[in-house]
Amino acid sequence: MATALITGGTSGIGHEFARQLAQKSYDLVLVARDKARLETVAQDLRSAYGVTVDLLPADLSDPEQLHTVAERLGDTDRPIDLLINNAGFGVHSRMLAEDLGPQDVAIDVMIRGVMVLSNAAGRAMRERHPGPTDKIGIINVGSTAGFVTMGAYSAIKAWVTVYTEGLANELTGTGVRATVLCPGWVHTEFHQRAGINASKIPEPLWLDADRLVRDALVDFERGQVISIPTKRYKVLISMARIAPRPMVRRVSKLFSSSRHSQ
Image (cartoon, rainbow, N blue to C red; front, side, top):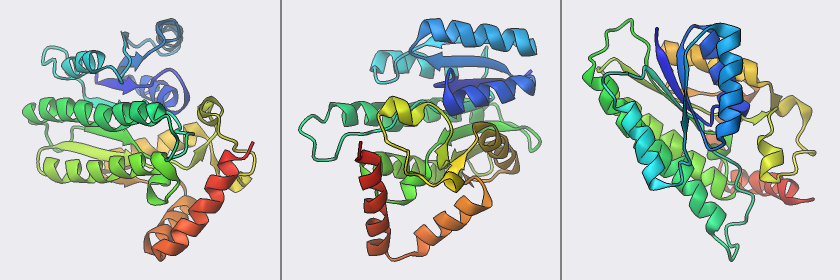
C-alpha cells in the first residue's frame, strides 16, 4: 500500500485529503497539534476504510517538532509516497500591525514548514528512483490569494506557488511530482477560526472541499504543476495574471476591506 503524510490532517482540506486517500487505500500519517482530535479522526478513518493511520502530533512552528516530521519523511524503512503540505491558517492581522507575532508564526508554518518538509520528502522520494507509472510526490496547498494582493497571507501563498514551481523544475526526470493546489473560498472552518468575515463573498465563489480535493488528486496524477479548481476560478486567476497590477491591487483592496469589516 502507498502511504501519505498529511499536515493539518484533522480538519478542512487536510481532513478531506485524508478521507479520499484512505478511500483509495492509502495508509496515512496525520500531523496536527491537537492529539485528542488526531486520535478521533484516526479512529474514524480506520473504522471506515480499514487503513493504517499513524499519528504524529506536532506544532510546525516549533523547529524541533518540525524536524521530527522531516525525519519521518526521510525514513527509508517506512517510505512516504505522497506528502500533503496543508497545515496553515488565515492571517487576519494587518501588515502594519504593531504585533507581528501572528505573521511570524504564519511564516514559520506556511513557508519554512513547507520548505523543510518538501526538502526532506523530495530528497527521500528521489533516491527511490520511481518509475514512470509511480505516483510519488508532493502537493503543497497554496491559495488563489497568492495571485492577488490581500496582505501577508497573499504574500505567503504566492511564495508557496513559486516555490512549488521551482521544485517541480528541479524534480523533472526523477519520477517525483510536485503540485501546488490553489483553492479559492472553501466551505470549511478555516475562515471562522481566522476571524475572517466571509459573509460578503458571493456564493458562486464558494467551493466544496470534496470536489476540490478530488480534482487536485486528478491534477497531481496527471503531472499538473498548478492545480486551480473549477472553470470559474481558472478564468478569474487567468484574468488576474494578465491584468495590469494597479487593477489587481484595487480589486484586492475591495476584498480586503470586506474581509476585515466586522
